[in-house]
Each structure stands twice: as structure tokens, then as C-alpha cells.
Length: 536
Image (tube, rainbow, N blue to C red; front, side, top):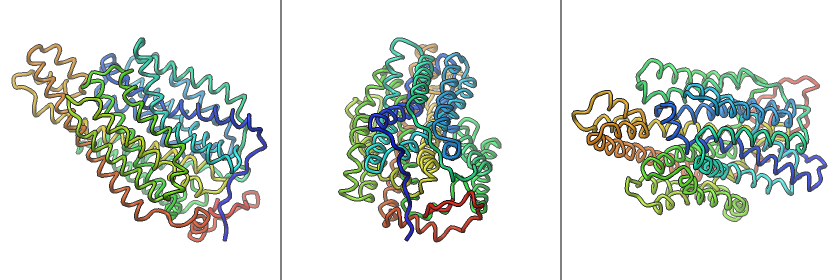
């Protein structure tokens, strides 16, 4: 029986490995925190730039969309050309986009520059995990990956706290400046500390597959975000969805025919790989969408400052980061299926609590929803990440890391798009239906742009504005309640699927199963590899 080999660690001293882990984790925190860190600045950014709710979604999702779309080819680039130079290049691009965004004054410019930072983030994130798997011996790799998982989740709270602190004294551009400085300093440390590594037998880069997968994701996300604003039957919206579906179909056809696909669709016949990808995608779909919505609720309805909003989210991050280190032990005790299922059920409970929030809710109810979400993610993420990484051989570790990261970012991107659109759709309809009679139509139309904009409109209208403000708050609450209920239903369905179809075999057996079903690609002698399990 063939097995799935793991990468052998280079001869690094323990002190050097600790340094490598520190730089890798800070690099990860830089790119992971870039989405939630800007969430606390959305109300102020909307007021300063006039961004509507759709543009606010794009400011967040432009980064996440490019990030997600390029993760898989970026992982392959690191495997082929060297992980250290790819990490350094990614940090440089991220810093350049961040510094430039700090000087922007229009939503469209910020959206474009966020996309540039997303390119850098795509180069950084898969490289961090593959550096860990190639630098640490097997005995230490589990703890290092556990630390990576903890930072990947708790990094969101780090972003919220640092942004909240900055916004206590400075305005939203300071968030970009801070991110750029941190990326630049980490780049210098990476040049000194990180050893270079690459796979001598890495396959060619599948540019066609990468382009088709990016087209598919971009079309679906564009249609989802623009639907509430343009209309779901608008030709642009329909064309975007059509492009997304067509891109996905072409990617599948191409990947099944080419000898070295970016991501072999046959991998989804491996239970551990499939359920791992499904779990990660759904977890971060809910998590990123929840953060996007709940931070607006805390600031615009409960009137929290950015720092107070960041502090309000901190307990969730503490639970997530602390429990992530214990999660492998818990999984060993109760099994992969039970750990993953329990985690998703805990997340469901938390989301259902958040769906009960209203304009007069105390923080204790918010906390009662956040804590089980953090605990659930800690339990569910560890087995999912391990299943994905262990399903691929050593020379595919960059791609394995990228698949894990892509599942996370695709889920987060779609979560912000879908749950944000559910909120946006419900909010716009609620304002239209419940706005007080006698208001100028242009005032109602402007109030539909976002809750932050409606509050500014209400202040200008006096007594009539108070009624409009109450209608806007009620519409926002109704919209996010529907979004949270949809999230809970998705989590429950996913939990049931994983409990029913979760992996029963070891990862070595999974590799054998794939080898038995995949066709043998034609290779030149230079491409021949002695790795067993999954074909190059």
C-alpha cells in the first residue's frame, strides 16, 4: 500500500525554528487581519467618502476576492520558484497597496488598491503554512500547525483591536499605514530568518486553471454583491452569474483533461479532503459575514466606539486562540467527526443567539452569541485543516496549504457577499416600506444606501428624520436577523453532512484511493517523482 509522504524538515536549530515560526505567524496575522481591521472603520469611511452599502461591501471584498482567487496558483508558484522569495514579494505588494490606500479619498480608488494588497496576501498566506510543513520535523509540526490555526482565527480579533485603538485618536487611513509598516518590518525579518525551500519536482503552473477558477469566483461574488443594488434580474447581475457558472464548468472540464491541474477535481473523492474543504468554507462563510454585520450593529445601533467594538469581540478571539492549541488533543480523544460536528453545532447556537439582537440589547446577549462561535471554530478548524494538508504529498504542500487557505478565503468572500446582500436587500426594502409619509423621495432613496448614510440624512430632516432613523434601524435589524438565520441553517446542514460522510480512513489510505481513481499523467524523466499517493 502506498502512503502519502510528509516533507522532511531541513537541519535548522531549535532557535532558528522558533524564529521561523515567529516570522511566519506575524506574516499570517498581517494578511488575515486586513479584512476585519477595516470593518470597524466602515462607518467613518462611509461618512468621509460617501460610500454606499454596496461600495462598503466591495471595499472589504475586493481584497478578499483577489486574495481567494489567486491562492491556488500562488501556492504552486511558491513550490516551484521558492517559498522565501514569494513570501517577501507578497509582503512588499501588500505594503505598497496599504500605503497607497492611505492617501486615497474615493471608494473606487480604495477598492482598486485593496485588490493590489489582495495579490500580496495571496502570495503570503499559503507560503506561511508550507514553510512550516517544510521546516519543522514531524514531532514538532503538529504544534506549529496548531499555532498557525490559532493565529489564522484570532488574527481577526488582533485586527479589530489595533484598528479600534488607532481610531480612538486617528482616522481610517491610519489603519492602512499601520498595516503597511507592519508588513514592511516583517519583510525585513523574513529576509534574515526564513530559509528558502522549493520542490525540485514541482509540476508546471496551471495558468489556464487558475484563470478559470478566478473567473468563476469573481462572477459569483460580483453578481451577489451587485444584486441588491442593481436588481437581481438586471442584465449585468445575470451576466456576472452566468460568467461565474461558465467559468466553473470550464475549470472542471480543463482540470479533468490536463496532466498537471492546479487542483485535481478527483481529490474531492477523498473524504478527508472533501469534508475538510466543506467545513473550512462554511465556517469562514459564517464567520466573516458575521463580523461584517455585527461590527456595524455594535457601532451604529449600540453606539460603540471602534475601540469598544474591537474589545467587544475580544472574548471570542481569546476562546478561539486558546482552544485551538488544545483542539488536536480533543480531536484525538473524541474523533474527527465528533469534534467537527460539535464545533459546527456550537457555531449554530451562537449565530442563533445573535439573530435575537435588537436596538435595546445588552452586551451580555452579544457575548452569549460570540463565545460559542469562537469555541466552535476552534474545534472544527483543526481537524479540517489537518485533513486537507495530510491528503497531499510533500511536493504538493504549497497547493495543500493554498487549498486550505482558498477554502477559508472563498468562504469568507462569499459570506460577506451573500450575508451582506441579504442584509442589504432587507434593509433597502425595509426603509422603502416603513419610511414615514411626506418625506422627499430623494431622502428615502439616499437613506437606503446604508445605515450610516441614513443617520446623516435623519439629522438634517429634524422631526421627520427621527421617524426615518427608527425605520432604518428596524430595517437593519430585520435584515441581519434573516442573514443570521440563514447562517444557522447552513451550519446545521454542514454538520449533518460531516457527521454522516466524514472520513473513515487514514490519510495514507485516502492517498491510495486517489491514486487508484486518477489517470496516470505522461511525464518526462525530469518530472518523474518517487512520491506515492497523489499523482503530480
